[in-house]
Amino acid sequence: MSNKIAVQVDDLTVAYNYKPVLWDIDLEIPEGVLMAIVGPNGAGKSTLIKSILGILKPIAGSVSIYGKSYDKQRSLVAYVPQKGSVDWDFPTTALDVVMMGTYGSLGWIKRPGQKQKKAALEALEQVGMLPFKNRQISQLSGGQQQRIFLARALVQDASIYFMDEPFQGVDATTEIAIINILKALRKANKTVIVVHHDLQTVPEYFDWVTFLNVKKIATGPVKDIFNDDNLTKTYGINYKVSIHK
Amino acid sequence: MDLLEYIELVINDYTLRTITLGTAILGAVTGMLGSFAVLRKQSLLGDAISHAALPGIAIAFLLTGAKESNTLLLGALVSGLIGTFWIRGIITKTHLKSDTALGLILSLFFGFGMLLLTFIQKQPNANQAGLDKYLFGQAATLVESDVWLMAIVTGLCLFVLLLFWKEFKILLFDKDYAKTLGFNTKTIDILITSFIVLAIVLGLQTVGVVLMSAMLLAPAAAARQWTNNLSVMVFLAAFFGAFSGVFGTAISATQNNLSTGPVIVIVASVFVMFSFIFSPNRGLLFRQIRFIKNRRDLELHKTLSFMFNIAKTHENISHPHTIKILNNFQGYTKGTLKKLVDKNYVTLNGNMWSLTQEGFETASNLYNQQFKKDE
Image 1 (spheres, helix red, strand yellow):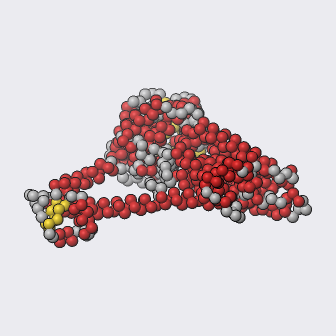
Image 2 (cartoon, helix red, strand yellow):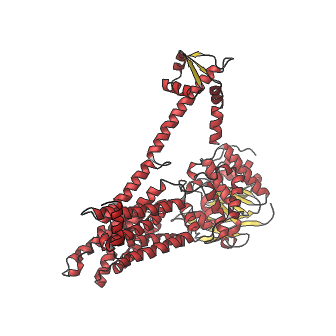
């Protein structure tokens, strides 16, 4: 971890209809952290990520990636959406989905070539999915589909990775495989931001955490702020489950 | 009339040639674009657009008094586009679901179109006859210039499709992700939708408002059954569409009193039904066959492993056992025993069975192999 700020969010407010989903969020994410965003359902965790990535338009506030707007820093950012957000019966193969990670650097019209294919195969190898490269994506298990999405982000070769619930519906083997990749990314001084649900694993997996429930409750190193007090403030109930540190 | 005679007729007869070419091109372009509509789960959009085109035809006639197709289709295009944007507007601005929005616009525009059509028919103007052909289409009214127009639009559509193939694909699969990569998804979206509207409008004269959406959906739905590759699917859909056009035209040309549009739609629907049943991977028939075969294999494996568990308690694995013992195993049938013998896993001697070396090895590797396959 260095002193550089990878992502800065100022006064971000987002609303779908009348009620704000995110209210006045200020957030600084230092470079090189592996950060969990935790909070109850409807706390705006996915919305926060989507707003930072420009998928959703905020009502107010601004976001900067290494000091510049997202539009200018796009190539530094990769995204792993929720697995359930796409139709896995789409007629395409695992390799083809991973190749999509290269589309951003290609820009309009230009087709992916050998170089892009090589990068995609490497990413598949990294997530242990190379033997499945030609598999139709509907014939992959949930954990395998998640790995494909991860590979697609890896191929972007970004500095900052945003992941929306990458552990959702995956088995223990896949979870370990994924967290090992995330830890390797952090080691390479990449910043990884993960929407996470399983509070028990936060201290083990992450070194940085943000508590969110429409408002930002707290953000900082896991060892300093991951405590019952913040959990209670975020989840609104007296949080009694003791968490191993 | 045999096939050769018919082909000769198509080549020599102006009307038949025009209709055949026209319906073939129309089928190809709607099949191509229909793939996108189907994959975006916007199957009903085509239906709404074609119905929304009707008032445009009537208004174009009322304003210009013209009956030539290009003017009327321009009207159809305008009102089709208006309908499409209203649907998009309703979906994004209100809480209504897309099927409600589609149904609403479809019936509103179609109702208004019918109203205008009846109004026009009551006019004391001899020129009005024939507007209602746009309801069910009349391929016989196609002339060479119509076909040229279709060909140009199809060529343009193909060019755009090849140019923006990668963008179309990523928009269809994962729109939000495409956005984060910096693609203007709205532009791609509008491009696809505009081409769908254009293709539908071009088909109104031939197939008509009511049946047009089938041209969009049927070839694409059939094509999806045969492939897991997007480019192959688009190509197949175009081929199925074109073939439906040619074949439908042939049927209606050689039989009396069969209107071309509906026949084409029926031919396309036959493609769909055939594909649903007989396609090798997704088809109902082979799926059922695979299902039954898998069950049988499993029964066989279960019986073999039951025998294996008995055999392995003996020093000599081929130690004979009585067949009666197998009755303790619930899935056992005489058929499975016979199959095991056929596969040389088991030998029979009177009412005794014994496991062969091969059967023993297969049984001991059964679950390991299963596990490897899954991994």
